[in-house]
Length: 118
Image 1: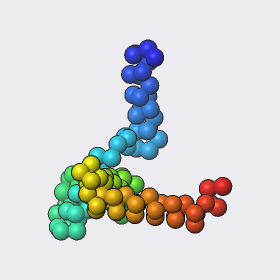
Image 2: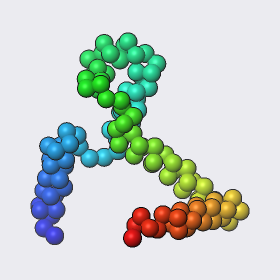
Image 3: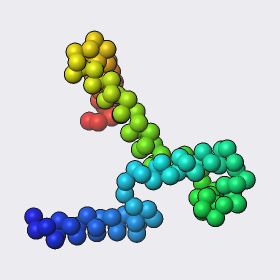
């Protein structure tokens, strides 16, 4: 692909995401929302009076309803799972048990929920 077109297309996608959803792409915003929610939980009065934090509470929406927070939680959980699977590289029994548990539970869930996909 032409490198100029390959550079412009992702920029247009990001611009469209900003236009339609009001925010860009990526999961780094989830950390920001988690920090704002933590500050609100610890020092609610400060969060409401701060010029930076108060912008996130303008519409009365709870911060943990944001999808970005759940993306970050999924990345952390995925990191723990892949860390357990790394034990397989040194032939650890725990790594193999973890792998069998993950794939075995995925197989069971797929069997129970197969009618939702078909």
